[in-house]
Amino acid sequence: MKTRAKVRTEKRSSRAATLAGLVVAGTGLAHFANPKAFEPITVAAFPDNTRRHVYTNGSIETAIGLALAGRRTRRLGLAGLLGYGAYLAGNTVRSR
Image 1: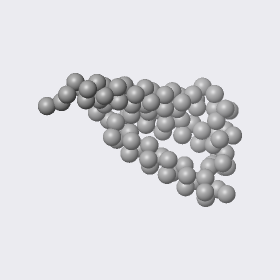
Image 2 (image 1 turned 135 degrees about the vertical axis):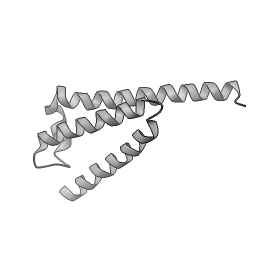
Image 3 (image 1 turned 120 degrees about the vertical axis):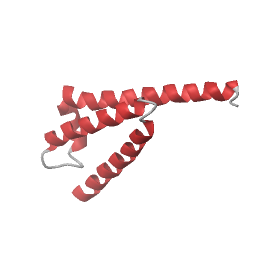
Image 4 (image 1 turned 60 degrees about the vertical axis):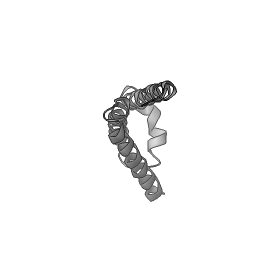
């Protein structure tokens, strides 16, 4: 049986995860609203066709953020976030 303290901690944790997911999704959507702001960051990993990659990254971040925001899809979102981080790191290293 769960104690009241454990239930409160789980609720806070769930709210924080939902908020974090919404922030990631909002950042992803910002790629479409203002792509020029993301080009200096993106060019390090994707020097060719940078604008296209800004939009691609925005799509990926939006999807990951929405997955993190949902309780049922949170684990999938975390897996996606780890894979996306590895993908970006690999491209950054390869582009140097």
